[in-house]
Image (cartoon, rainbow, N blue to C red; front, side):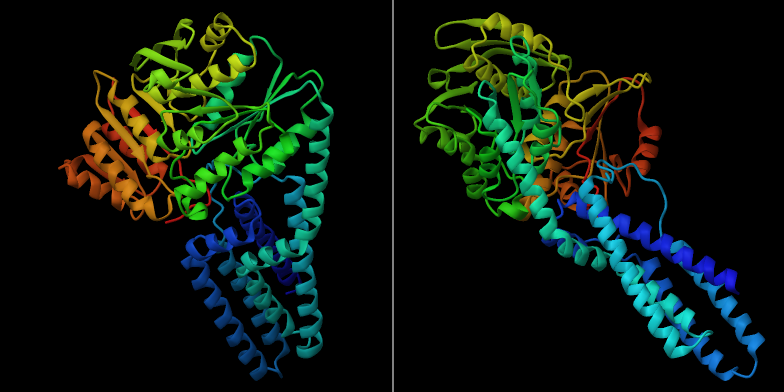
Length: 547
């Protein structure tokens, strides 16, 4: 019996740790923002699965039955001990299925950063304190036989509500984290200020900013020693980490990608990095759950331009109708790029030839200079990203020949319309990074350029579009119906608007497959795909998303 109770104790500790790690991962994905974390809890079934709820009720009833039986059998010590042993074993058997240990590939796995370690430790201490209080209280109240099952029950309750325990731990540790964050923020800020010869370039936009960052960096390396922020480092703490740990005197240029979810986010990043060149790539309906409307998005992206010094350079995608309004009201030095109103543009592309192998185009400026360029990047939208990089390069003093050499060295960016050849005769287009209406439209345009085989799309649709989400996905479905031969929709509920859009254009129902996971989608592909077919993977939902 003692061995069973000791084992049950270790099982409880193990399960508490594993469940707390699950919610720590969600808290990390939500940027340690308590309000966003709570919103996830309210919407997500993974927090309290049906199996967990059912087995919790079983454990509760089992404990009640045990206490009743133990009271009636006070005179039969051996029987009571046997029942206690049986309780511990049954409790462990009921706990085992509640924690799903199936290893799933995630886009952003839990990373035990120093902050994650501090939050995890705080939660562990909080759990220990609660369990210790429960142990002492019920040991004195109920005696040796009864107290342990009751402690296990209350431990199970604590396990069940680890979501709340971690939330409380995040509140407890927040003042400490704020002080630590500000220390590293100010340290990075002072480092930037002391590097007088460093050229800082800020890039923001609803989409295209990551691609533009890597493209710009590749071109500038023809003349300068460049440091880019890594792919997902576009927050104050992310930028502070790169500045403090990687930026050094050997670097002449620092390119900072600037992400935002709320008004004021870009201004905070500009105050940190002090860029002299600012680029706005695009404005569209992303993160509308926090921004609420496009006006707030425009206001936030324009913070980059507002905070540039008086001798700074603002670079605008003038073909974007929203950015055009911002460019027209800007009186700082500015460079306009695009492909449409060429008489108003400083840099533009013409004679564009787009195919499934990449693009060829001519870049010109107002002075009549021009270069004929070729890139392996797919899609017309990537030409806009290259044009942004060209504008930065010209502002940094590169000539057209240096720029041409830089463009030739640009490599496809992972998960952003890059081609994968699995060696089966089937072409895969990986556009799995977060999708948006313009990006999805561009991906379908790229897919349409492939000739010979059938076209298959695998997609869960678009998220984080607020009230526009259903309409955007319905339009997405209509566009899919005009291009694709087969459609694999991931998620029965979330893809309903896409299905409706497909029906609106009279798409064949027999060519639509609705699955619940990427694994199921793979099985469908194995049945329907053949050599020469092209498969587009459009969007991979965030790890913290649920129907």
